[in-house]
Image 1 (tube, helix red, strand yellow):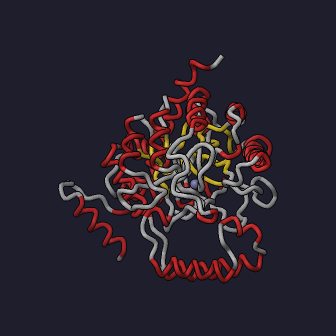
Image 2 (image 1 turned 45 degrees about the vertical axis):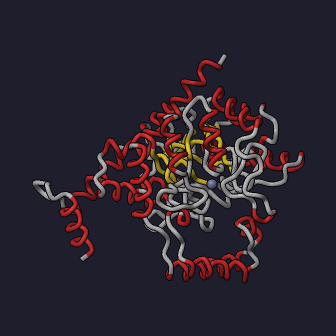
Image 3 (image 1 turned 180 degrees about the vertical axis):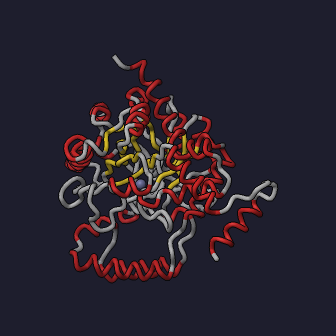
Length: 414
Ligand SMILES: [Zn+2]
């Protein structure tokens, strides 16, 4: 039944087609496209125990983790930016030192996977050419992005070290304002005001310049609108939004306004539309209430609190959440592609890409982990995107920006 309904829709959508494509043919065509293009997911988080026995990227688990090498193979996901993320904490010397050491733990884990544990399966890419070479060799591609500038404290020299460790994009800000600029989401627990600096700080401007010189992409995701616009104005090379959707479809503080979207286009950058349930559409009030009630009953105040929950408590949480999800399903692939369609209509096919935010709250119905990546391509094909366009969305645009920043930085290399 489902297939027939779908076929009818497709035939109606393309009434001029001499011979209508059957749904089986379309799936086969989408498979071919998915196999040929390079798919780059620009945002996959890792916990501090990544690349240990507790989270072995070749084996399923631990709880809730959505990306492993076998699931990337199953879903035809070719490359992922693995994220060195540290949550915003106190802006004190000891706070910076702790954040820096947490960041190094994650850098080390990514190098451990690609150099010691599974060098035959996955390789670290440092350039756009590396991505294409490694993909052609049949291995999976790892790249490194940083999320939150907090670990650098006020020491610009650390950016050189992050570059040497392989960081190729750098998000200056996360939840909560920091020394570099304002966040799109102030820290409500510490009663932060909506704005602290009114945009990018002087230190933030210096960071943007140094990132340009090093050849690290500037990432505006998580920044306030003014901070993002300041970064776009300040940067001499294209900037990205590594994982943000569009305010024009759903007005969420984490999404890009049309002004930011067009600024990124004018700078020849790219917005990586993210498969994050609550950014794609309004989460039903009943679901929000049910989750709030569950968190309250278990004493959870933020995502950080999950780390101190015992195995039993996590099991209870997962069972309860599964029931809530059954009643109120997550946003789906169609919601994701609605945001992609909007961005493409607004700024053209050359400035739009795709991100999951897996392991960091991302994942939707139909793309709930790396093994389901093909479903995104199938929906794009269903909506009439060509292979060339899908190739741009899945990776060519992002790799163009990476190559542009490499070329820009060349003049500063010794
Ligand atoms: Zn994020």
